Image (cartoon, rainbow, N blue to C red):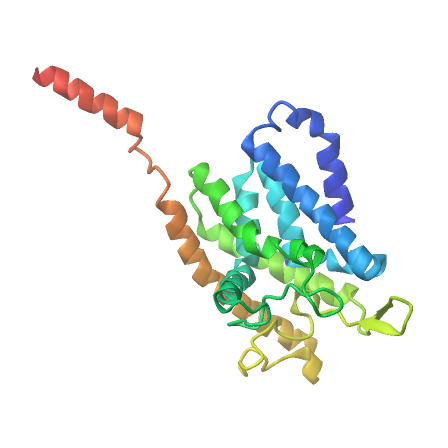
Length: 271
């Protein structure tokens, strides 16, 4: 429902964006929406419509549309929240991918997180394109925010953490407990959308799997544990992202044109 409303809303207002859709931010926003549609189609073709609809609950899926909304409507706060909501997972994913390239092995990972495999367990062009957003979404948001001279604030960290917590809570109530059949050949897919059953990857890290719900632990305790640790990891990336954006932000009272004008007048007065 959220995806349908967002697509219909942005499409209905497309006339407002026609004048600037050829500009960089308009093109990027529309490409983000195109990628979201492609991911939904890929899930439908690989599994079925029912599973594809549940996959829309992923934080990374919502973040793509939130970033597109922020870019198309000139709301950098939305772009910042979108980047922060996924950076704790996308950061290690990028490092995993770099390690794959270094090792020249698509199965080699550092955090056991990144995977480009399709349904058959092997990477395909479609499966790789579908998860490619884990690579470029955060860098794209950073580039957009840096170009706009946007300064990241603490409230963006709180809002993104609240968004992740709310989505994971919603997923707990909406996601089926049993696996969902697909393919018509006895195949069944157990969904772990937004860590409702166990922590992503890090199989050798006993701490992160301490309260996994699939081990019989109460879902409430796992929700608190998972969101607390995810927020802590996001805080680390927030510091890095804030530093990266601050390096390209013009501080108030230090505008280059003003400084140049004052320097020129001082030189003329001295002359």
